[in-house]
Length: 133
Image (cartoon, rainbow, N blue to C red; front, side, top):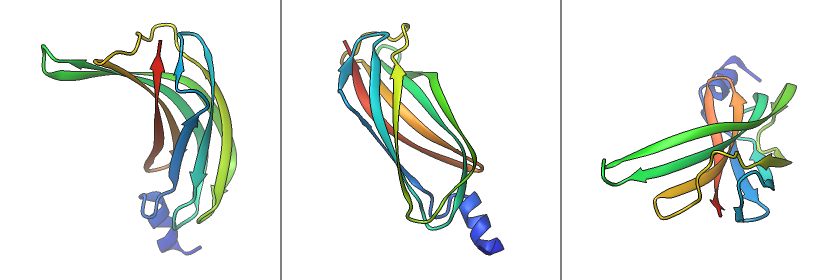
C-alpha cells in the first residue's frame, strides 16, 4: 500500500460501511438485546482500534423547537493491530443492556443503537432504531 492510499484511508476516502441489525425491535429498560454489526471494507485498508456500542435517545422538544440528544456508551470491543482490507466483510455479534435511565419510546422520544468503528481520522458508524416499552 502506497503513501497516497494510506492518506486516503486516514481521511475517510472510500470509507468502510457499518450495518446494524437487532434481533428484536423492542425491549424494556435493563433488558439484554442481541444484535449483529456488519463491517464492509472501503477502497483502502484501515486500522480498526475498537468497536464502540452506544445507546442514543433523541427527544423532540416541540415547545422549544429543538431536539435533545443523549448518548450512553454501553460497550467496547478492542482490536489489536487489525486492518480491515478493501471489500472485506466482517460480521460481529454483540449484546447490550438497555440503560435504566432511558425513557419509554413515544412519538417525541426515539431510541437507537449505534455501532461505531474507532478508526483514526474517520467517523464511521451505523444505527438501528429500537423501541423501549
